[in-house]
Image 1 (cartoon, helix red, strand yellow):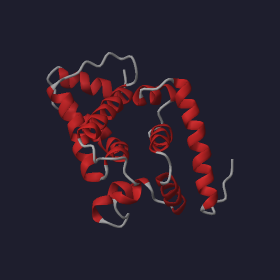
Image 2: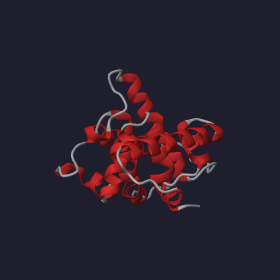
Image 3: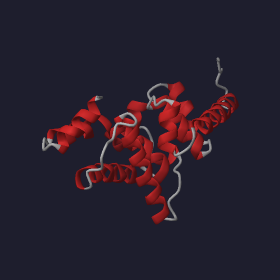
Image 4: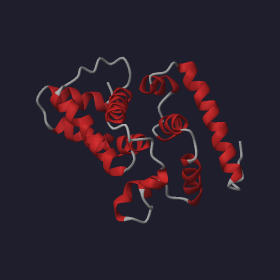
Length: 184
């Protein structure tokens, strides 16, 4: 049983420290993941809070069919899709709209995109199809397997493999257009 599952089980058994551990462990990754759906860090933070409120109030059953992290990100994806449906004007955000890296509220992004190369990758990611951004984020930043990303994105593993292939090719094209010396 992974740490997330153990902390959630403890929370369900009455140990409030369990939910505190989950929030500390997963909040930053969830915010970055949700920001790709919703139009900014403020909304992403609200949606991240909704994920944990759902855990506290609804206490959904974690059945262990996937890793706890995969299960949690799938819940987050569902909450983001509900948000988009309810707020028709909401759209996948541009990473540029998330704020400048030098702004005080963007410490999370500054930590995530430190080097110049990462900044270039961030700029190129911004130009990609939203599903490409999502699959690349899940697989390379959050280190989910293709099977886990498939569960989160509600696609087959084969669809994720194809999407990932096209996303990497598209990112490679964007990087080359920006003058990045791409090495395989």
